[in-house]
Image (cartoon, rainbow over all chains, first blue to last red; front, side):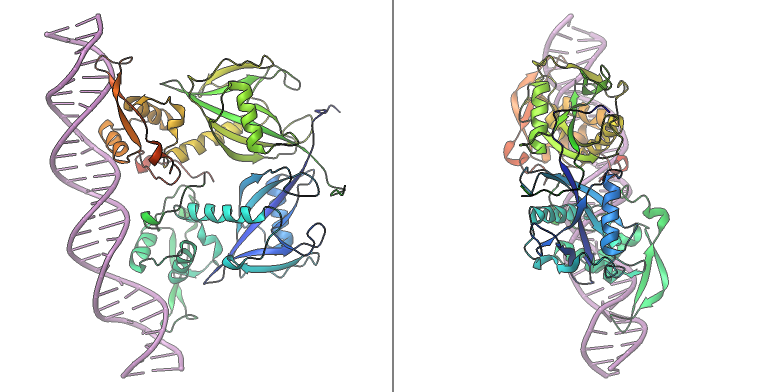
Length: 237
Length: 237
DNA sequence: GCAAAAGTGTTAGCTATACACCCATGA
DNA sequence: TCATGGGTGTATAGCTAACACTTTTGC
């Protein structure tokens, strides 16, 4: 078979930045490496691209391995390429960002890895360039969430408006006016009100809502300005 | 030296999608391949990632090789990974998007390549998955340009408001109201009016403007809605 | 003097924000 | 009955979009 001779081949790794929200704080799922180098240090969940899979498939495979979850929100973010980012040999790192419902996460079946959720502002020291990756992912999430309805991916199927508001307030670290927030959200038509209430966090109880799949599918299309303009984050790309 | 043994290494290519604007239409710079496979077919300008460079460096190197230009607007867009996208062997393709001032482009010094500008809506058949890459880049450019002032990168240092408007009208394929367009743009404070006029396209002449580097530096920060909302393109990332 | 492109203001409708009180309930 | 969190409406300011005529000048 013909080859592009004389060119250097490198390893390609996929690293997943997995966001979760516990109702109050954002968290990231990290693994403690079971192999050298940096054995036992904390790291993003990653793995090498295999011969017959695409990057998307690799990311999904890794995510399933770690969390047991399939069909989660996953998006390719950026490819990192400092020649010495991995001290062992050259590895080009493709970073994916995942948003998962933290409650659906199952204790990993795979015992090769030691896994833990870390609070976003209490992360351990990470290996290689993983801190940079996390910072970029956070910027990106803020940027995208400021215009498009994606944070829903962090919540269960049924959720309440106060939960949703906490999600936005947490990400942008600000208070949002309840009335304006509710009005914008409801007028966007992406929510369906249920007849049940969540009584776990108040006596009165808050109505559950779910996504209106019809209108939510136009996902990207939709521009939803839940965040006041002067608080808007910088562009990241 | 230790290695991650048993993992497969692959080639990493960088492909550049180079946008230009001739005052009326958008164009892409393409090369005719000088080597197999697909010799003589048209392709995006690309090359393999070299051992000691980052992807950004590779993209800049390739761009310089082809256009003679340095320090142009260049941004990493997406990484493509279908296992069989290149029939010779597996190549992971990192795509960059470049915006250049078409007038600054110099006939390439490097004779290895045969180069040509193609009208955006009259592209030749491209090799591999390059058509998909181009489509994605176009979406991305529309999306980003609908909110952030980046199209300036396609113009010379001095430009007129009618030129700028043609740039937007061309990208979004629509007429824009001259008065509203001008007002928004000037109130954004990113332009400086010159005392010269461009008489090449009308008898009266149109004033030249240049970017106010101070305020334009906050580039990404700035949200500039020159495009009416109902014409807004879908999200792409 | 006329054709061709550049430049300029006003209004109406809409959207974003600021703001405060009542409701339902469990303890 | 009271403490806690959930739910709701209105008024104002600022922004967006629609719209047409005058200016300049080369021919």
